[in-house]
Image (cartoon, rainbow, N blue to C red; front, side, top):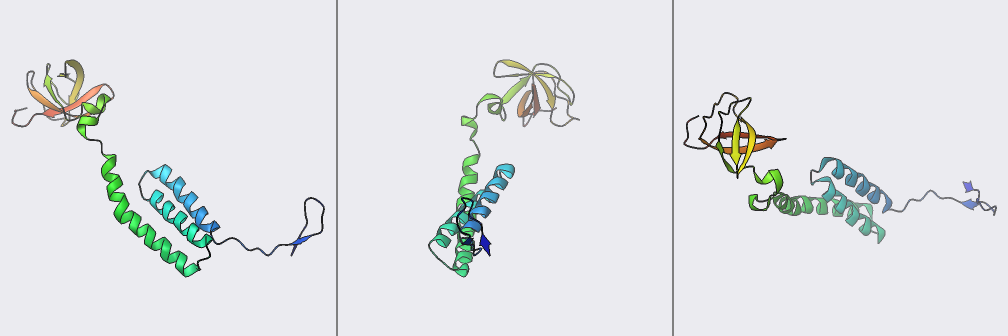
Length: 164
């Protein structure tokens, strides 16, 4: 098949050959987009394996070797790198800031807390609160643990050993 030259020269032959590395770059780009949308720490590592395979394909390796490299590098990255990266995603309590630092802290009920309303004092600040267990009623003066922060409301539960 001949393709016209856009500059006006004689037609040149088009053989339809695609570089063997190009499909791997496309796979890497697709997996990169999936990683951005899912944040699963899986597709990003598969994208890296696809890029490694693209390099192998670029130096002239055959299809069988390309598949072997892709499989081996994907497996190695998922089994070795992902657990290490996942551990580093969890921020230790001592490094948290803002309202995230309040989760897990001890507070004091200054007004009765139930599944709908209440007040607690967390680190010197008064917060609206509700109990984590909607059936639990926490009396004033009882220590509570902050389970989560939802907007401006602390979700709490009675501290261990204290009756609700």
